[in-house]
Length: 264
Length: 163
Ligand SMILES: Cc1cc2nc3c(=O)[nH]c(=O)nc-3n(C[C@H](O)[C@H](O)[C@H](O)COP(=O)(O)OP(=O)(O)OC[C@H]3O[C@@H](n4cnc5c(N)ncnc54)[C@H](O)[C@@H]3O)c2cc1C
Ligand code: FES
Ligand code: FES
Image (cartoon, protein in one colour):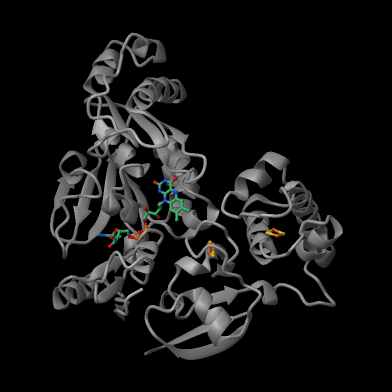
């Protein structure tokens, strides 16, 4: 790691001031992605601002038809939350399968979404559920938030503070994990929302998380796994690597989508 | 340099550290508690697992400064050579180790599994929960047996203490 200065603000306002005072500073959430990146000297931020001492960023609450999750809620906290289990049980299940127990004790929903790893699990859920991202400056729809591989709409000095999820009729996420890294080879999130069915895919897109209109249309007539049987996923925009070809991943999208609908 | 204070195995310790100091470096180099190991240094193997405020984490992927004010428990804090923790005793009894390199992390993780999942653990649960701990020697079978037995023994000890 390159040397850096360290700040641990106690309020969001202090964090905001610390960011403004140090252009190029990096926010530290659970550190499960950032610390390995710093170790490899892939980043040299000068200043690291640790969000772990701001209690407000951890809250999980349900208000009417919306579930609010603070950006600093850990995967273990989301997995174990009674509010999440009651409102969107599939989201708790998703969180309980991220990485391993130690990673889940540290890694956060905000860190995962801000990082937007093309194989991460939460982005698919946020997109399928039509989540809203709240920052210290504005609110963004999930659709506008994700902008390709490891890219989001967040500005350099913007802090993701909370994610709100409209509670759907049904939701589930099915992941085909890479057995070594546990990241998704293909992960499919399906939701039956007030605005109709939504399907989002992680792990398979050359440009990160994406929706699949053909699968969504097929589900409009009835939210049943059988409705997806006749849909073929084309390989355009699907990535291939040592773990699987675009053809294999395209096939897996169909399989995981049917499993997710059956589980929802 | 920045001052950091934490409660390590029940003892308050303070040191001046560079901000980039990892918790595992603080534990091993500053506190000379070398039971916590570094296997991969890339958050894969679990040799460095300790408890921070009661939860198992990988100390190679945590900054020491993030733990200012926290309670940290390492393998040295769970039992002594003459009075092993029930989980340590179970690893010895069931031959849950060969070279022993992964063992401190395995034991810290296993105690955390019992905290979260109770003392009656089935094989599938134990194997899934050991996802973040790698052993290069044993082939895991005896580790799984040791965790199940250690968990039962922890249950028996709590019951005795309550009586
Ligand atoms: C062994 C291992 C296995 C894993 N397996 C999986 C898996 O199966 N599925 C999966 O989805 N992920 C997996 N991960 C990644 C894990 O979920 C990370 O926790 C997550 O990607 C990053 O979250 P974090 O809180 O650790 O963020 P950090 O590492 O602290 O930060 C990540 C990035 O986000 C930025 N950031 C963090 N918080 C905010 C905020 N509030 N506002 C703005 N920017 C912010 C940081 O500046 C940094 O650039 C795994 C990680 C490891 C080490
Ligand atoms: S040394 Fe920390 S996980 Fe391997
Ligand atoms: S006993 Fe040697 S690595 Fe596990």
